[in-house]
Amino acid sequence: MKFLIVLLLALIAYVSAEQCSGYTTIAKCVGEGDVCNHDQPCTELLYCNNNGNSVQNGTCVKYAELNQDCSKTTCSPLYSCESNKCVVANNVQNNGTCQSDYQCMGSMTCVSSVCTLGTNKCKVNVECPFGTSCDVSSGNCTTDIAAGQSIPVKADQKCALGSAQNTDGKCVALYSLAANAACNDDSLCDDQLICSAGVCAAIPAATPSTTNCSATACTSYEVCICKGGDTNATSGTCYTKDLTGSAMETRKNSHMDYLNCVNTNKCVLENNLQAPAYSSCADDKCATEWCKFQSDNVFKAVYNPIPESCQRNDPICANNSSNMVSASFSLIVILSIIVASIF
Image (cartoon, rainbow, N blue to C red; front, side, top):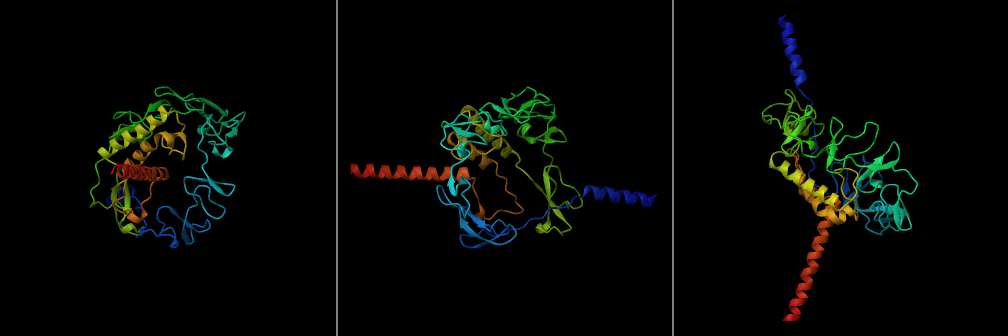
């Protein structure tokens, strides 16, 4: 009997443990012309050209920019390669003005200078007019379901932007559920709560840093990281895997500001977290809100900090920032000319 009790306790301890996760430390990112690979990536505005083989080494090269040849290189993340030239593509929504098919979102075509599905069936939500989404089963664009309403069982409709489907089939406004309410995703719960075991609940207290998570499991809001990142290590530490406290509220507010801007300007998005396509309605009208959300959504892993040389901005935000700098510089030049003319 005593042996069985010891065996049972050992089994419980084994079940409570979890396999720690490892990581590779990146010392720095390398520049143009340097050798690059998975462990030694390129700095921003460059990519690792390894002929599509992610296993072998490559060389850091510049992206091809707008209207440049892309037959042997990759276009900047803002552009697409069409007929061996980098172009602005997939940025015009239904009934928007266009010159070429590739400008239209999804599989729409440019007919009489307007993006349209014509007689074709829709395949993705962005092919439908604002306020509607694609019912893939029928190929028709159907009206989005408002918060508080249920999605028909046999339909493939989606909830309106700013809401999401909950466990009961109803659309629920993001960040609106209180403690103990049934949920299926963190984004439905109030900003200081998470969805845990199917209900909105407070974030569990942090596991002490002295606890070996290879022997005692972390909470659901933590990740077990191997000591030194070595997967062969016999010990690990629990680390929070997402934002906490006031940072969660800040993220919620900036996310809703972005979605409210998109709704106000009737811009089309595939879902609540989609980035604006370059030069699309959402980019032209709501890039500032999107970039604020991206900034507030950054979670830095303290166990493996990213070197400053490896910091990368969202392509839309990097472009938005450079445009602001250019505008500021132009204003300074204009003011200098005015001042010089006065004196």
